[in-house]
Length: 141
Image (cartoon, rainbow, N blue to C red; front, side):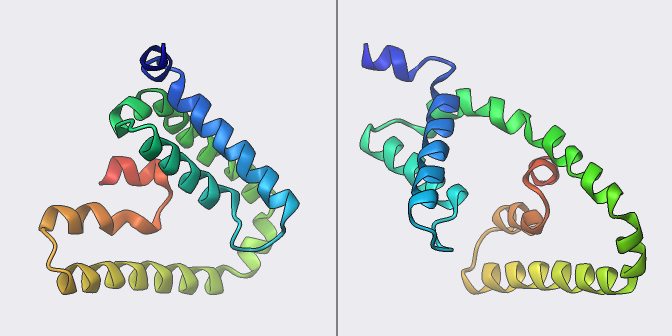
């Protein structure tokens, strides 16, 4: 019965949603900045997978449904961004400089760490797009 439950295609999504709900409840109870619901739910999910000795592929079969929704949810962020067009145009120079500095520092930090840790080129190239959204980074890497 236990294997039947774990190997269903809905196990990953149910576990993800349940751990996120629990993390939100923890955040409501204790309002510390380190209790970010995404961070806590990731730790909880890893903990459950480790304790129940469930491999990542089994979990990911159901969790892919959430990954599939990353791209449309990222696109939905364009609506509030569009509503702030005047503010964006007003601060265009500062935005461009900030984006360039952030991208360059992200790329350089990955390169330096990969050189110091002597990782393979495959690891280096897969870590390079770490500063972009997950929905785009999955395709890029």
